[in-house]
Length: 307
Length: 307
Image (cartoon, rainbow over all chains, first blue to last red):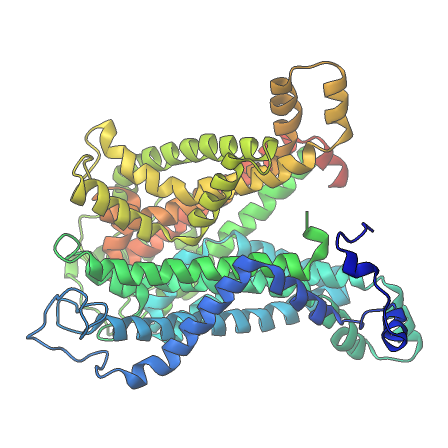
């Protein structure tokens, strides 16, 4: 402890305050409170979080206040640059780009969140079961995961999309089929190592059933690394959707997603570069923010990984 | 060692069989596939060739065996849309081109990624470290199609200094390779940096320094050789990423590679070509991963003991 530099620190303090100061322990924090405290100190992560929350609010409420609909064509205002009337300009069919990007945000954020959530549920159940039962069941279940990880999932997503038709539902299903395996691996390794801990033994001695131990003790305690990996699933799901829509098999016209907006803008790249700039900026900034949040969460939730 | 390799080969074989089976099942299930009777809108000569080739009058299981046998012989099927196109023609024509661009990208990303990673680890906290870590986040956050479009716009549209169409000269390679390398460079730099930081604190590094070795030798022979292991594991994934990344890049830069044909077939709804190429990609990826696994054992003898 270093001596405080200012004289005020040496002044006498009233008795009551002294009593209070003798309470040496700070309020005890739960794992999650502690993680939140650490996350709050990570400036980049907080900037990212603010951006994503703002983007989410804009995506939900923005279209309600906009005078334009996402599929409303104003043929007197085709490919106009940004102006007070159309903040981000209009596209080749005279549609307001700002509103279309907000709809794109709805799709991207919804796909990112829903697929991350579903993947977390599947992955945690699968990995938790494998790790908890152990033995041969574990071995077989994890070999299946090894095989699924080795498959080039994006290619199968492409095929599934063609098979199920191009809409949000099939994008979600395709994403959920392929990307829970990483979460399953992490949950399993967590459960396997936690299983040996004393508190599990003591819970067992206290008469808890296996099911209770898994749900009440093992899974909650393995959540940190799982949540970190799931956070990184959100940008990769958004990326996959943008990629599919960019190739023309994702979100279909007249609906807009960031990927399909970027795809539409290729033809007019030279004459109207702003049509490319805004969707691309939206994707990149969101990806940045989500990656920063992921990095911050990793540092906050998994103190062992910190350097 | 041999046992380990045999085990890996066996699991790769299982993966490939699963991959082919899934593909076969999808092919039978996709609406509009010629395998479903009553949905035959294809030229009669194509239909006849397909019926001969796949023995469509035979029972399902036999069709499956025929399909397996064809692929084992290196025959990835024929187009459903045009009678004169076989998937193998596409692979013969497109793969060497994709491999040249992708190979160049692998080399570039390894050189730059390792270089940046080493320098940032050795001069931790320095200017180059901070710059390269910002660069790494940028590279991870921005999708390939965004960089591809931006570079296209800047170098060809605004400044007009680099060619963007085809692969006639070495200058044609610059932009596509740059697009493909950006995110691998970012990953490799990040990975190299963190594993170098860990390795450089080990006792054997101190020993090497104590022996009076030059710092360059310590870093490259003792440090990098150990720090490179996670990068080697990533190489298998990198090849897969370059293959999928190349879809967008080959399309935007009009490179007649295999990824371009894949995208074109998606547009044409030519299922059989898509599935044939997917199987080819899949087998390629699995084989790359196997090679990487074997390489890994050769580089790091410690693996043998744990396996």
